[in-house]
Image 1 (cartoon, rainbow, N blue to C red):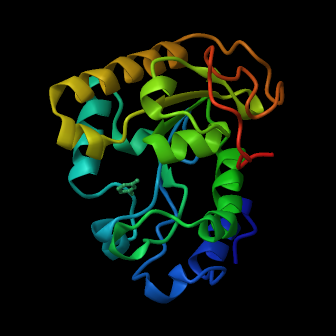
Image 2 (cartoon, protein in one colour; image 1 turned 180 degrees about the vertical axis):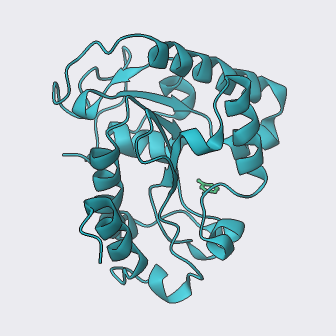
Amino acid sequence: MSDDPFDELRRAALGCVACGLAETRANVVFGVGDRGAGLMLVGEAPGKNEDLQGEPFVGAAGRLLDELLAEIGIAREEVYIANVLKCRPPGNRDPRPAEIDACKGYLREQIRLIAPDVVVTLGAFASRLLLGVETGVTRLRGRRYDWWLGAALVPTFHPSAALRGGERVKDQIREDLALVSDILASPKEAPPGAGGPTEGGLAEGGAPRQESLFE
Ligand code: URA
């Protein structure tokens, strides 16, 4: 048996029965990719395909995500991809507060152990939760936030919004990924451990903070 903390975390998640989603899931979707990645992407929750295959972002939204990453020269295998919720909410309904509470420790530990330079949150749900705010993703995106453990957080639209919204939304995701590319190419500004999870805060006029995943 491995005593690697990441393997242990994965094992714990795969056997998790902390919320009712354990009864309806086909598979726990823990996450996939390079555990030493400088870039981590965080979505909302597995959909039907992800639940069946046990891997995040394998449906149409995932294929678009792979394409957009490829445009900045990054392959799926080079990043780490996870969701806030590790199990599929039936019918793709919104995650419930009790489910988020039961699951958030897994994501927090994944981020702590991977220690990426950049975390990209895909869509309003993950962006709000990780930043601890209620602002919409349209207003949050387009900039970096100095975040937890010295990482930069870059919110962007969920790729499924681009599937619905067409080229305009895709171009905005491209802009955000170009920013990610610049951050990854530049030396780190803040030493690890500097600042709190929401330090760097919101743009002028941002919404009041809600309880953060990381507080
Ligand atoms: N949407 C998400 O937020 N995550 C997935 O893994 C798939 C679709």
